[in-house]
Image (cartoon, rainbow, N blue to C red):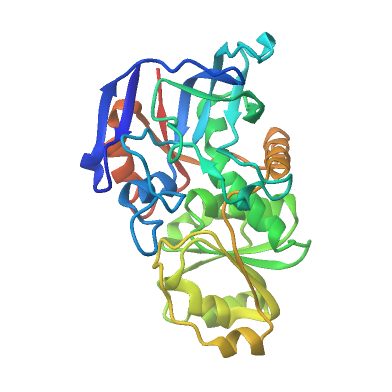
Length: 345
C-alpha cells in the first residue's frame, strides 16, 4: 500500500511517500481501507517536535518512534477483521476514535498511558490502517470526506464546551474561528448548547460564513480596540472564552471575561508562552481549563449531533494522499475556513 511516513523531527521534507505491506489486524482489531483523513495541527506539531517542553516529543514524553505514519481523523470501510472480532463488522463504514487508554470511562483522555493514532500508532496517511474494533464507530454522514473532519477537532471542541458547561443565552467568545476546532466550537456552542457566540477572525470577509455557522457577532483580531469592541457588541463582559490561539489573544480574553468567567484553551497557534498577571485570575475569579480530545461518551454525543444535522462539516480543500507535503503546507496558511483533507481514490 501507499503510505506517507514521517522519518524524523523537522520540516515537510521529513514526509516521505513509500510502499509498505498492508498491516494484518490483531485478534481484537479490524483493517480499515482509508477513504479520507483530515489534517490536524497535531500531526504537524508531532513532526516538528512541538509537544515537548524540554525536548522534542509526540503526545508521550519519550518521543516518537520513527518512521511513523501520521493521521488521526480517519473515515473508511472495514475490509478485514481479527479472529476475536465479529465478522459482521466487515463492510461497515466507520470513523475511528483516535486513541487507546486504560483510563476509566470519563477519564480515558487523561490516563498516563493514553496513546494516539498517528503518533504512538501508525495512522491514516495511508491506504489501510489497523485499529481496535471497539474504537470504530459508525460514520455519522454518508460521505467519507465529510465524516472524516470531526474526530480530533470535533472531540476536542465538544469536550471544551462540556468542560465550561455552556448554558443557553450565555455569551461565548471563540478564537481561531475559521480553523477546524474553532469552526466547530462556533457550531457546538450556538447550535447544540444555545449560546450567543462572538467570533474572532483575521479576515472580516468571513463574516457571512461565520454567521451561517452560528456566530452572533464577528470581529477581527487586527482591531486596535478589540477588547472594547467585544464588550460593546455584547453589552458587557463575556461568560467564557474557547481559545485555540494562545498568547496572541490571551490578555484580551482575560480582559473581556466577566467575574467568575471561564477560559478554556486547546491550542497555541498564536504563541505557546505568555505573560500572566495572577491578579487578573484571582481578583476576577477566573477558572482556567486546559483541554484536548475527550471521552468515548463525548465522542458518541458528538457523532449523534452530527448525524442529526446540528453540526455541519466545514471543508476548505482536499488533496490526494500523494500530496501530503503540499497539504500540510497549505494547512498552515492563514485565511482558510475549515478542514483540509487527504483523500484516497
